[in-house]
Length: 293
Image 1 (cartoon, rainbow, N blue to C red):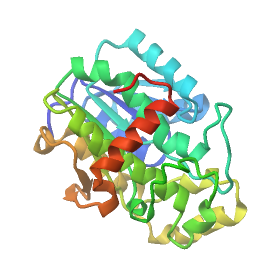
Image 2: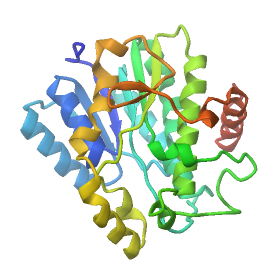
Image 3: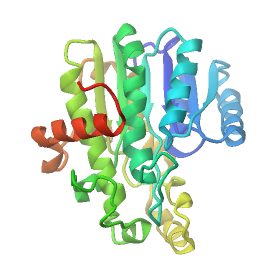
Image 4: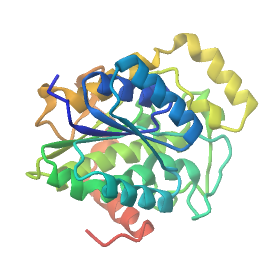
């Protein structure tokens, strides 16, 4: 464990589950943790619990809806107004929906939360991360990414959508697709950040008991998640790899890798397709109206 006292760590989706346990563990190391959540009330409750358990008062709460690109831009502007540096960015927030939903900005919601959101947030924070180097980016993916597919002609699942009902068959195409995209984004970003002092890695937390299925909008899906709960590991265990990548000296200079159970892991063949990674990157930049890179 490296010295974390005074380091500023952002953790998205940190009012519950893996995100909360990640924030808690980082707070225990003495880091200044910025919890990024969507709901003020639930976020403040979690923040106070973390402060009480750790004795670390340096735990901040900031609001951002990761499905909204406008919200992400507002958050980034507010963050830069409060903080002059960023040492660790943990893109943890994730979601899965039973039915296809479109955000007011016109993005499929699972795609927006799990992929576009982390992509844009990272983009908005890169200047601070580079100026604070050595710094780290950690992306939380899923083992289900192996079932994913990146179709550049249907990135937002307009032709074929399957949500949490398919999860029961351990497929969850849309969720899996977005988590595969997050892996590919990690690998492409690592090449682009070479020699900057900023590392970026992705992780698979395992089959963790979280609130992931609660936002599905389906009673049957919620029941299914409760049924499999005994087979899942707890959120504290699931957060171990996130905390390891955020704080361990062992991975201080490691970038562009995937980890599971604090060990380097191999991901599915599709995730290593460099040509597709670059094409996905360019499509994403165009969708978000960002300057070509």
